[in-house]
Length: 130
Image (cartoon, rainbow, N blue to C red; front, top):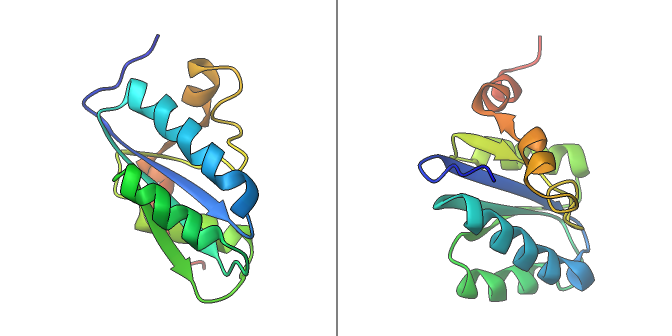
């Protein structure tokens, strides 16, 4: 099993009207990442949800201080939510599972390691388009 205790990991979860499944996903992502990383943040980017998505995140952030809410004023789409989260992320590595937990959880650490995105990609995404 791979252990990256000294690295700081950011997980960016874009969410639009995910009230029903986000709670379970956040618990699973938190528990899985906590096994492998001592330093982590889980950023949930609310993409203008009209359901109880924000409330779910606020409740779970009290239980898991690593969970943070990033708000978009309206629904801009998944691409904007991912980009916003990547720019807000402070970790050495950034990954972004969907609100259903994929691709982070299904087959354990090997898939999780493949889904890690290096900080270089984070910097690349933050550069203006030419």
